[in-house]
Structures are given as structure tokens and as C-alpha cells.
Length: 410
Image (cartoon, rainbow, N blue to C red; front, side, top):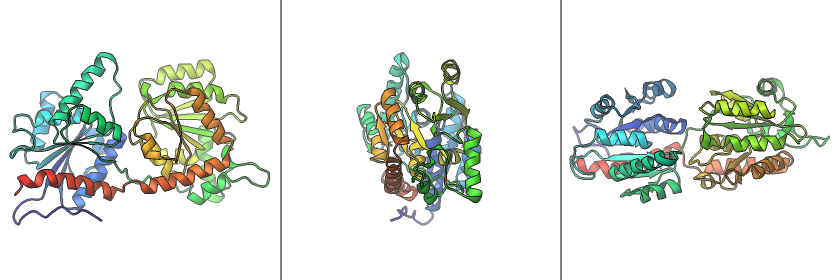
């Protein structure tokens, strides 16, 4: 049932929320865009404060929100800009640690949280930092400060909720995030992918590009695989920033093992980041069947062309790649970390983080077993159907807003 915020008394303006983004990961930015659209549709006034480039990518204005550009920095000018945007807000909702820290600075000087006159601060932790050493200690201090300054802290996975409680949050709750339904490429429908992995009369399957598709759909699918260099070989796809915590070193270790398969799978990694140089040098030095293709805006097409999606990260909450892979019916091999097990259930092959032999074996077993791939596709669609919808998510968030803001608007 759709939650409708209680209409304000006659003459009172609608509830005004300010959504604050920091650097804006793909997941949190997509969530804020979806949330803004849902809140506006329910009569809530929404202002989004974020770095200017994010509005160009996510069009918050197109969702009906007012957009105020605020740099990610925590310098006085940025805090002043954020304070101005929050001046008449009934509630501020910050997404991520740095956005929450800047929001708490902008709201500083008012009465303690939950007392009249104080603008309540809601914080959503979509992910956690992967700092080490001294930076990790600083990170924990920031987490404690943010946790204690929030009226409600929402975690997108159970371990984030536990982390928030351990950091001193007075009210930490699980709040799964619904991403917008992925755009489905025209050349790959459910029936086409199901047929692709069924053995034909020769016993062969579509795992090396024999899709069974015809006409424009088959041509587009073949073109996507040809561009990547995987017409006659399995295509394995990983998507995400090239950072150490993504587990790409382990992925390269596994790729060395896959050179013994016939045909040799091609691993494609879409993304950019500081580890590109080291990864590139290792791929070249060891002659690994891996391509780095940079940041892409056609991930749905890449997924539709892939035989298996890979997620070897050290930690994830509600991974956008896992979300899109299960929706698209692409078998997923992922690490059993963070929020992934509760997100995917039995709809993916889960392996320990950093265990290259386990990753290599899981993928090799999938490539050799079309019935297992078919089961994962079916399980993935069932699991995806069980996730909260965008409407569910907006209703849950709005109930939190009403709980916090309504006492101060009477």
C-alpha cells in the first residue's frame, strides 16, 4: 500500500526535506534520484544538495526536486552553502559518511536532536569506507560523530546497522534500498537468454556466443560480444571502480587458472580508478585473458552479453551489479561478504573473499553446467521480485520523516 504523508494543516506549507549527497556513488545517487521522485509525487518538497556534476548525470530537477550545487569539500564556504539550503527544512537526510558530517556541521548550533527547534538529521549508510591504518582510526571517529548526531541512522544491510549501533547511534534501523529497475536491452529478453543456455542437438550451449537469437536481436548481441572480443569464448564481466577493495587482484589470480579451460574465457572489467596501472601491468606481464574497458554507460548491454557476472569485492552492501545481474538473469559469482548473502539468497554462487581457487572453481563449474546456470537465472528473478520496490522504499522513508518531523510542525 502506498504511504501518503499526512497533509499539512490549511495554510501550512508541505513537508520540506533536504537530501544531501557527498561524492555520490552510483548506488546512493540512483537512490536519491528515485527517492526524490517518489517524495515529490506524494506532495513533499525536496531539495537535493550535491556536487554539480551529479545533477548532470542524474537529473534531480527532472524528478521534481530543487537542486543546489554544493561541493563535496567540508570547507567553510561549502558548509555555509549547505546551511542556507537547509534553513527552512523540516528534515535533512544525508547519504553517506561525508555528506552526514557536512550536514551535521551545517546544522550545528541548534538544540540537541529531537528537541523542538532542531532540524532532525536522518543518515543513510549505503556503504562503508575501506581505509587502513591511521586513516581507519580517523574513519571510526567520524562514524561515531555522525552516528551520535543523527536522529535516525539507516543501514542498507544488517552489518551496517550493527556498525551504527556500535558507533553510538541512538536509533539504527535496517532500510534496504530499491534501485530503479534496470533498463532491459532490446536484444535480450528472458526467453532468449533461457534458450541460449539450453543444449542443442549437438550438445553445445550458448556459453561461447551461440545465442540462438535471430534478426536484429541476434545481430545486436553478436555485435556486443564482438566489440569485447568474445564471439567464440565465454564472457565474464566485472563492473566497479578500480580500487583495492574490489578484489581485482584475486580476480586476476583466478584468470590465470582459467587459461587452462577450452575455450579460454575472456574477463572484462568495466570501471576506472587508481589501480588501473598496476592491474594493466600485471595483465600484460602475465598474458592474462583480461580486458580493462574503462567506465561505461552501457552496463545493461554488457550484462546481457555476458555469460557470468563477477563480484570479488572485500565488502559490499546492496551492490548495484548484483542488483542488475539478478534482474537480468545473468549468473552471478560473488564474495560472501557484507550484505551480499542477504541480498542474493540462493540466487548466486558465493565464495570467500580473497580465495582465488574458490572463485576459479565456481566459475569453471558454472561454465560447464548449463542446468546450474539456468537454475541461477530462475532463482535470480525470484529473488529480485522479493526485493522492496521503489514505492516500498519511499513509503518506509516517508514514515520515518513523519515520525521525526510531524511533532515539530503542529
